[in-house]
Each structure stands twice: as structure tokens, then as C-alpha cells.
Length: 376
Image 1 (cartoon, rainbow, N blue to C red):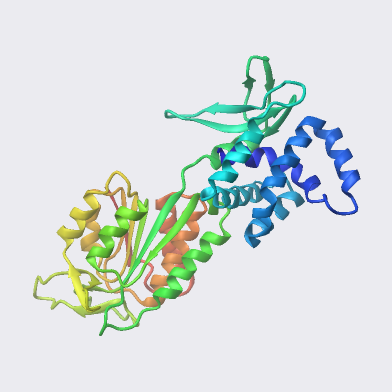
Image 2 (cartoon, rainbow, N blue to C red; image 1 turned 45 degrees about the horizontal axis):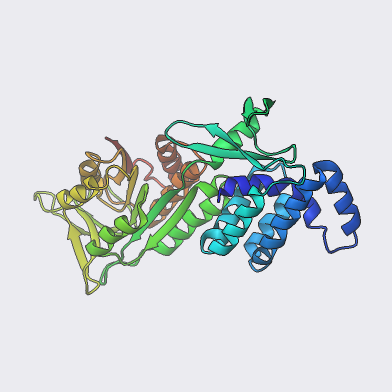
């Protein structure tokens, strides 16, 4: 089942379908049949009859449907509806099969429903609309030849961008957090909530998802990378390293210092099986990420003294953010907020990094130069 095709088909009918069962039933039916054709309207009613019980049982799905019905041309509403339909059908093979048969069924005038596809880079074609009973539905882009009929339909650049965006793969952000026993408490929950809030408000929220792992051990990190297949990995927690004499940071994400005259280990603190601190060497974590270099695009190490490990990981991963010295808890949270505001808005990692640094600066916190960006 192509979720984009289902959304494209049902969207123009929703303003009429939601009136069914009310006083406007007859008027809605007559108006829809006149606008779309009797065959297409009957097919839309059949789809809605099968789908509506599932929609009514889930509040977020009902809200998405209502939003689209109020403004069928709104791209953000359509994107939200695609997400909800995908969730509804994910574990319901019977409903998926039923809807597929309805959409593929022939109309009374013996014109079968035809999916319109668009060639894209790679080895896949993407469904961008449908033809049913002589009517065209969906975000049809460019000049498209439909079947053997020789008909073509033009669309606006906005519709073209919408269709392309809807077919982009969903990226996973894996958030790893650790605050071992005996270390100063960090506001990690607030940081993760801010990232999630940024995703919820983003116009590209259907293109990202967030996975969270807390109190992580080295084993947890390995398994999370295997289970979640993330494109962005974000670590929040403590770090170990040498402090600078003029560093006035308070509430820092530093757990201890390595003496200035020594060359002791620096890096990130995860947890062991008892919940206590476990320092992971730069070589070990860099070697781990090297095994996932074909999947992970960006790593953010939001902890003190993480520049050493950022340099090591950047040998394998395109973009890595680290902290070159101790950073305060408040500054670390503001950096995350700005960084993901940029990234979830569809901007580049470089832009998101600069926005994160500026978010610290705008708050009047003198630590906006602490984050560093390393590129492979």
C-alpha cells in the first residue's frame, strides 16, 4: 500500500466525507458526485467506510483528517495525515489489503484506477497521484503521461516540491543519555524534551523520528545502533578532560579533570552494569562508529571535553560536533535547541551547528565558541 497514493486519493474528498451522517448528507453527496464523478465518489466512500473506524479510534488521526478537510491544499496538513495513515496501517494487514483492492478496482465505466508514477534518481519510482474514472487526484508533478491515453497533466512548482518531499526517507535521531551514579545531576530530560518539541513543531516532522536510550552502557549503545539504524546520533552526559584556567563555566557537564601536566584519558562517561561511571576511549568509540559509517551521517557529543573523541569519530562520519572544553548545562541545552531547530527545518548540518552556537550567544551565555564542528 502506497501511503502517498492513499493520501493523494482521499484528500480532495475529505471535506465532503466528513459531512456524511449529518444534515448535509444529501447535499454533500450531490456536490461531490458532480465535482468528481459518480464512480470516483463511490470509490472514495468505500475507502472512507473501511478507514473511518480506525481514524475515529485515534485522536491524533482524527485531528489530522479534520485539518486536511478544512484545508486540503495545505502541505503540512497532508504530511501529518500521511504519518497518521502509515501508523494506522502499519499493523493491520487486513485493512491494508481491503483498501488496496478498493483503490485498484475498476470503475463502472470500465476505466481502471491507474497510479501515476514519477521517475526519481535511483532504482525506484514514486506514486504521486491516481486516475480514477477519468478524474485525476494527487500532487501530479511536471508533464506526466498517463497510461496509454496520451493525456498529460501539469502542476505547479509547489505541488512538485510537495511530492518530492513526501517521498524522502525518514531519518532517525538516536538520543543517548547517561548520568552515572555519583556524578552531578544534569538536566538531560529537559534537553531531550526540547529536541522532541522542536520535532513536533517542525514543518518537516514527518521526515524525522526520535529514539531515546537512557542510562546507556557500552552494550546499550551497540544495540541501539543495530536496532534503530540512526542517521543522527546525539549523546548527552558527562565528559572528562583538562580544564582551562579561565573557564568560569558553572553546572558543567564535566565529571573530573585531568591534571594539566598529565596526558590522562579524555572522553565520554557512560555507565557500567552497576550504574557507575565507565570511560570509553576515543579509539573504541571511533572504531564502533566506523562499523556504521554507511548509515550514520552526523554525531553530536553534547558533553565536556568531547573534542578528542569528535576528532576520532570524524575519521569515519561526515559530521561530528564536540565540545573543546567544559560547557555549562544551560549552554549545552541551548545549543541542542538551536541545532535541532535548524536541522529539523531542513537546513544543513553546517547551518544547524552555527544556529546552535548562536542560540547560546543570544542567551548571553559566554560559551558560544565551545562547540566545534568536525568534518570527515
